[in-house]
Length: 293
Length: 322
Image (cartoon, rainbow over all chains, first blue to last red; front, side, top):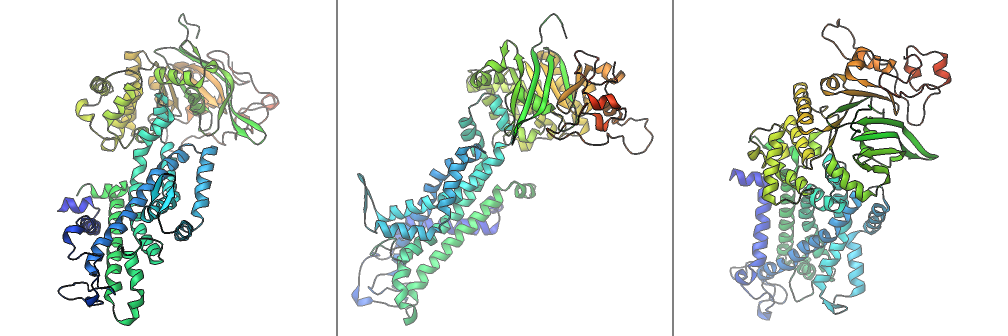
């Protein structure tokens, strides 16, 4: 147990890790554990408060909220995790190349372009782009891109500047290290030094940032779905459940908004605690103080 | 230096500069030296004297915009200034290797010692992983690391400073170099470990017939293992001679003052000797002799004209010498 706590950087990190594992398990096992069909309308059971049959109550169409919260974890996590993967796919090489070519035009072009993208807030970008493209299926050449994929890719692209800058700074530092000069002396070409020697030393801040960014992605999914541009009804997502519940907040049907909101909060806290824990584990100064334990 | 065998390394009129607003600002003004196999030459001088730049230019690793403005470098059969950078990369990897000041920075923290050694070996010799690992073990043994086989699986942070520098030396030897550049290899180490590392370098020079170019500001260390010393000041070699002669009969006032700075056991207690003033800024050399503002023996002639560079051992770039 002690080793498990240390692996997550302390008890809070372990709690975060446990929350993340539970939420992911919930999303994966949705067909098995959700008590009802999340989309089944039951007009005789509209807006029933939580009871033994419907633990989280039902919504205005009589759909079981517990089932919808369970199924709604899927798009939230898919968008949260998928967008971070997209940002790593592009941001990692960009940051590495910019940092390794300090002082050249390559660095200037990459970093100034990313600055320009980062100058407009992510949520505004996302709403503007989805608003222009529409929430339906977009046809990109032969590819049909559904709205959820569109949001995932879009958020991923918008994360690139933040992620790339973190890798850029880490690469700047590493590129000065003597082992890079030693590798050059061995006659190893620059791109190979960059990807096989420098890259592993830049990964720990990336892992921390990625974990924290998943939480941001879950919130942004909720925000985009809340304004009606994300996951489209009747499919359930935590964001569009909140959106649909807004008419009932002041009419007493609290369970419509509280449960999806609660799951967003718990999941985001889980990813944040886990990210903080991982940062503590990967930080060498922290490692020194924990080593003798 | 007109021995029967030609020197392995020959540098003549090497000039290095940084780009400035009004053209290049020279910081190394025509340096000449030669180095034979099995010989150790020390480049000695204060920070900013150009000794590190001189060494780095040999391996084409000049920092931040600095570039060679002129001069000739011959390594073995190859005239470096006439080659493409691709060809230079092949030569410097195979024939020249370098040991750095800070062994922690010279080793990649993400990989085991064994992985780094085998990578370095395989970048020059087409060996299988197994054969390279065997060779890596031999190298660790050669540099005096106990139980080398087990150490192959260690990460740099699991080793002591002295061991790390030994590993860095093994790494430098992986390609089978003929010339080893050691840039203040003991600055980051404890005094007792310093002596061990210098002894190791001396042994390697003998066993492998290495030519070693040692860059240092520590004349004590230099005295231990070097054959010849070139004293640099403000981008020039001001005096060059054998170690014995430098210590016995220093010609240049700067050399004398450097020697006076070494504390001795029989010194009376009191403040340590220093050289007053600072080395001149890049591109702002005083008129006449560059050392004039700090020289206790300067007179009118030093103000009017710079002295000639030393042409052979025993001469010094000083009007008062010889």
